[in-house]
Each structure stands twice: as C-alpha cells, then as structure tokens.
Amino acid sequence: MTSLWLDRPDLPAHPPVPAGRSFGVVVVGGGLTGLTTALLLARAGCSVAVVEARHLGAVTTGNTTGKVTVLQGTKLARIARRHSRKTLRTYVEANVEGQQWLLRYCAEHDVPVQRRPDVTFAQTEDGRDTVAAVYDAAREADLPVEWLEEPGLPFPTYGAARVPDQAQLDAGDLVVALASDVERHGGEIFAGSRVRGIDTGRPCRLQLAHGEVRADRVVLATGTPILNRGGHFARLEPLRSYALALDAPGPLPPVMAISAEAPTRSLRTADVVGGERLVVAGHGHPGGRAVSPREHVLELTRWAAEHFPGAVPTHAWSAQDYRGIDQLPSVGRLTPGSDRVLLATGYDKWGLAMAPAAALALASTILDGHMPWTRGVRTWRPNAVTGLDRAVAYNAGVAARLTVDRSTPRVHSSGVAPPEGQGRVELDRQRLVAVSTVNGLTRRLSATCTHLGGVVAWNDAEHSWDCPLHGSRFAADGSVLEGPATCALRRLPGAVPEPPGAAEAS
Image 1 (tube, rainbow, N blue to C red):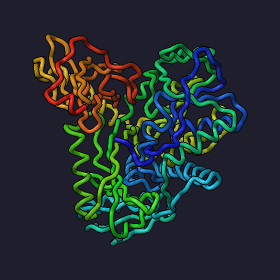
Image 2 (cartoon, rainbow, N blue to C red):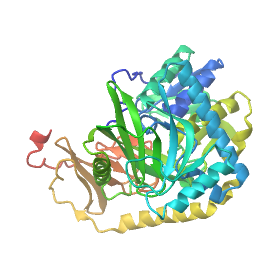
Image 3 (cartoon, rainbow, N blue to C red):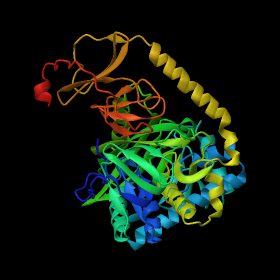
Image 4 (cartoon, one colour):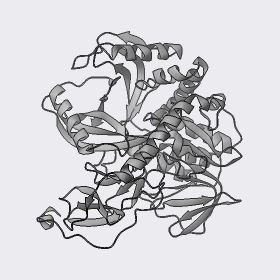
C-alpha cells in the first residue's frame, strides 16, 4: 500500500548516520515535526541532524490526507467537553499559528496549495447534535464558522459546520521542500538509522544498531515517543485509518469534508497531472484491534463506488496517529526534571497544522524563546488530570487485552503454512508464534511485541504484525515499522513448507 503522496520518483534518499558523530541537536524522526524543527534550528545556526529509521515521510506525514485545517472534524467539540474555554482557545491559537507558518512556507518555496472550505457534516439525524457541538466549539474559539443545512455533497447530509479558507496539499511536495531547505541551511539528514535507546547523560548518547551518536539535546519526533521514560505511551491511544485515491468522472466537491459519526468518511480532491483525483479516507479503529483491516479498505472502496459512480482506485494506504488521553497534544520535556530530551505527540490525525506549531515550540525551548500558547499543550501540564479517568479506563483495557490475548485458545502448530497474504498466531508448546506467508515466503516469529509484551495480530491489508496495546507495528519479516517498539520481533527456527502455488504467487 503506497500513498498518492509517496508514489513519486523525486523523494530524497539519505545515507545512514555514521557512528561516532556528534551534533548540537539530533531530531529523531523525518516527518513534518522533525523536518520543521530541524529547519528552524538550522536557520538559527545550530548544529542539527535528522535521524530517520526508514525514509523521510515514511509514517504519518507521508500517509496523511493532506488537510491543513483548524476545524478538524469533531476535535474542537471533544476538547470543549473536557476543558475550559481558555484551553480550547489556546489549542486553536497553536493550530492557527502552525497552519499560517506552513502556508507562508509553502508560498515562499513554491509548494502547491489549494485553498478550500472545510466542512464537518452529519451522516444521520443522530449526528446532527454532534455537528452542532462542533459549531458551538468553533464559535467559542472565535473561528469564522457557519452552519449549513446543505453543504453540497453528493449524498444525504443532516447539517454541517463550515470554516472557509482552509487548505490542502500534497505531503510529498512538502517533504521534498523541507528536506532540501534543511540541508541548504547546514543541517544533515540521515535515513535507515533506527534509534534503539538513549542515554540522557551529558552528552546524550543515542544507540543505533551500528554504534552510537552524541548530542547535547534530542527531539523525539516519532509519532509516539520511543522511550518509556515519562510513561507517555500510557497516555496515548494509537488510531489507524485508511485512504484511497480514485480517478472519478464528473465534477468533484470543491470542499474538504469529514463526517461527525463513525464510520468516518473524509473527502478532498488532489491535483494530479491532467486533472484531479478524489481522496476518500476513514474507517478508523484502535491500532492492532481490527479483525480484518483489508475489509475496512474494501468497505471504503464500496462506499466511494456507490456515491461516485465510475470511480476507479489508483492508490490505497493507511496511517496511524496517536490521540492524547485528555484530547490534547503534548509538546515539551520527556521527563519533568530535564529539557535535554524533548518530544511532540498526540496530534490525533490533525498534524499538518499542529506539527509546525509543535516544531515552533520545540525550537523555541532549545533557543530560549517563548510562545504564550505553549502552556496549554505542554507535557506535564497542570490540567492533564482532566484525562485521568480516561487514562485509567484505557490502561485497564490494555491490561485486559493482554490477559485475554495470552489466555485465548490458539491453533496448535501444524506444519501447514498460511495461504499467501495471510498470517496467524499459533501455539507451539508454550510459545506463541506469529506465522505468515508473504510473496511465497513463510516466516515464523515470536508473537510477543518487543515493547511491553503484547500479542501481535495479523494485518491482512498491509501484511504486517500490529500490537493491540500501544500501536507498535512490524513487517512480515519482524522488522519494526512504527510505534514505541525499537527492536524487531524475534525470528524463530523451523521454516514452514511453502503452500501450493506459492512459487507462482511470488
């Protein structure tokens, strides 16, 4: 599954970071937060390096829907339910600042942007009250929101909240521009370099498979922090969702839009050579907890075909982002007593506005600056207690899931390989084994997540092993794709015979 934004020949390639190097700041993660933070620091004359585990934009940034908006579906209503008006306004202020910084940057660096109104709509009568709450929260935050009975979409709706003059873009264009700009200002970028641990002494020592590098300061721009210190993983919910790009005949809606109820339906257009495509996204669920992710993709495809007759999919992809337990992002110190390691997380799928804001806050901390709105989204903020009830419930659910997964009856190892594209967790004596067949190759791995011991589940859409506890994901060969895990699933001996027809399938 490759996103429309990453299907391009000009994505920059970068070498691994040489062991033994030292930098003023190492930014771990090559998405929008990491690249923007590195650029701001490089402009200020800092010695800065971006260290990316895979390739730039490999995770959330390269798989976004590409909406740069401050309306953000039902996000504002959810914040308003749990927080004060002041906190809501602070969150919106941060996103407006991040959005405007990004749009100025795109204008100055010839990154194409299309201005569009953004609409949150109700799919049912029951959803009308939810949209009304979105409208009320947006007004409370002083956004120029309006109520529409009919937003002009090609399917039934039951009211909508609309904010004008938002934006959409191609995330690949943005990654290419930012990477070039970081290097033009003296920053360095390295890829294929997974950080496995950090000693936070003076200097910080970052452990990689082939050695270590040193830094005075470290920024974790990894979606979810890769360090357990501070327990941030326990205050985040991993959320996975799906997207399609389609060639669709006829005029397409000239808006960005998203439904207020599940299953989520998100729409936008995308400029391509010779015209534009429709991008449809949604069907989100907690990471690692879908019975069949492939079925989510198929259902999204069926919905698009029903409402846009003749639409033909050209790309399908998926993304994972993390929601803060108290509905707010967290930007700042990893632990309360030190600012040597900083982080940004919890964007809840709305990072194209919040990530630049987080980068501005992180760079400001390192450069001894100040931004008044950072108090409302900082780590270790006083109002974090507002999410305590949800944190307790969520982590109780995590513990229950671990117990159930460990005690669930499993198919005993039989020596029969799964069919092509399929995987299952088997019981081999007392050991849980993850067995899959992909491209004709059958692999046996430990089914125990290397983060905190969750039992991984097979993702039949992306041919990966996903942990249902905190969102770690692993390729069919066990290598880490994303999440708080930093070590691969352990490979086990005992190859399984290839299924009939595997040679042809490969």
